[in-house]
Amino acid sequence: MKKVLFLLVSLFGFSAVSVIAQQRPIYDQYHFNYYLINPAVAGADKCSHLMATGKQSWLGSDGPSTYLLSYRTRLNSKNIGLGGYIYNDHTPQFNYIGGQFTFAYHIPMSIGGKYSQKVELDRQLSFGISARVKYLKYDEVENVDDPANISEGEFMPDVNLGVYYVSYGFFAGASATNIIKFQPDMLGDSYTDEYLTAFLFMGYDFDFSRERTLEPSVNFNIDTKEHRQAEFNLKYMQNNSDLDFGWWAQLSYRHCLDKGNAQPLSLIPIVGARFGKFQLAYAFNLSLNEMASHNYGTHELMLAYTFCIPKRFCR
Image (cartoon, rainbow, N blue to C red):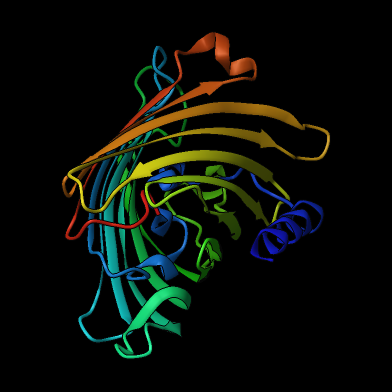
């Protein structure tokens, strides 16, 4: 029944949800940490997670580089989750330094064994809200005659909201960001709006044994300017919480669904391993469109420490 439910929900997502291309730079990293696109994930499991990620985009050209540090946890004996991250995203002209603080509330919907009466988190509904701020610095570009070529900065506030649901193998989340419309004074009309953006993801874990799991998932996003993007993922995990080692491999395909401009965007192979409570992962983003001839892809490295042995990787 759960498999049928997953297929029906996926088909509904394909037919009813449009998806965006207007993503913020850090959102490429959610394969390792869904908290980056949905605040309700903070504290959704019993583990506390500390994750550091570095990404170099469009290697071979003057592409952006991004560095991020995030932490999320669940308060002891409470249904409250807390989280936060800080990041630095640098391009030749712009430098974004920002972060967010998250409050989440979780409603467990399943109970453990008859005698233990221990609340489990295999079925749970979660809600989250984040306060965000970033500092946008525009750097002067030499030898370019442009009145906007100055070096100054400005703070930009934002809020995001999310809901997240898990039911044993099934998981799904919906969130919205860029809720506060803000136009930096220093750039005026030359600044490109960060439009209100909605994200939807869903997936299902097919357990072949206690140690082996296959997880297909789909991710969608859309903004108010009808920029759309879809992503399809297939992940294999082999993990035994009694051992000090586990590993996973994932292949993702990203596609642009903009009207009149539907095209493949990238193919993303990902590999990772767990050594005790440490996790290490690498992702390579290979462009499939016209940008492929101008760079050597995007490289991303993640190092994480979990304060317990997680049942699932990268969620």
